[in-house]
Image (cartoon, rainbow, N blue to C red):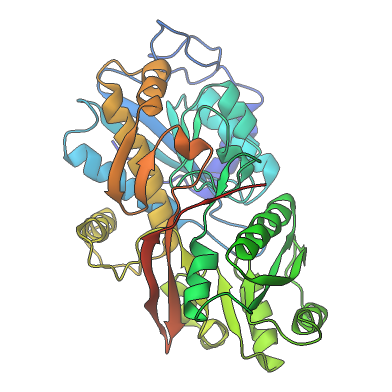
Length: 425
């Protein structure tokens, strides 16, 4: 019972109606008109005898032009296969598609409210956005929510899960060391090497600089530059001031590596400016593993030689589970071969973790039974490594790889591996 994603105009109209009619569109299996979480003993919101209703929240559009729309396709692919295999304990996944939050905090919260109060979903999976202002609402409503754990909301709440764990922990949690350890391997060791870390001037950017600076320092790097200084709402037209600061940060000379905790198009502008200034060191970011970016010559040139952090098996991996992922994406695309990107896999693995826990919850599916299953959940050998809950609500699963773009194609530079995490201070 998978439904196509709504047209953007229809989504906007629906959002406008939410404030006026939160009690409308009741699901026959949910409490009448309250929009609140199902209580113990009551039928679970979004669960009928035949189906489990699930929706998503994805930044399909943004002011910068960056899009995560294929996150929805990845989730759809995983749910299609689950249904083809008989569903979840005899119920089909009724995936109603993802709401577009436009990477806007107000729209993110509005989307969360709509999914719960109007659409009556049991779970939100995937949730992929750099803003997650709907987190408190979803937690209060006890809505199991799954996504890419790149915001603090994925670290601590009982009902919110990162598909690869918690990536922005509070003190007492741990940090994933894939990026520092991988770059150390590429450079022949971290000893005597320096790194500059740059991010957007936002809460997420500041936290990213804090965590990755600690991670690189722990791996043995000298962190010569660590600033969340790039505007978060608009891409700079002139990168010269940032480039000047970075290239003189290592005692008056350039660092050995520049790590951008940003997404494209910021990375395109920064890397292009660094190369034009003559920088010969290592460039790296966590988002530009996307063949679609190579369609334009300027973009391809800017990213040539860049090392991209992955927190899952590379598409180039011979792993049988990667072959299954590719087959599922092809099936969800109507049998057509489509260029793969990391957003597909974030949606796919968000859906996969939800399905895996829901299956362990048994036929009597309620929020309580789902949470009980999550409290004792673990599995091994997935595309993101070994998984365990509730460990993943405080720590990352610690695995990843580095790929490098060379001559218009991605090559695996550091194979997928799980690293010992370090305590976050």
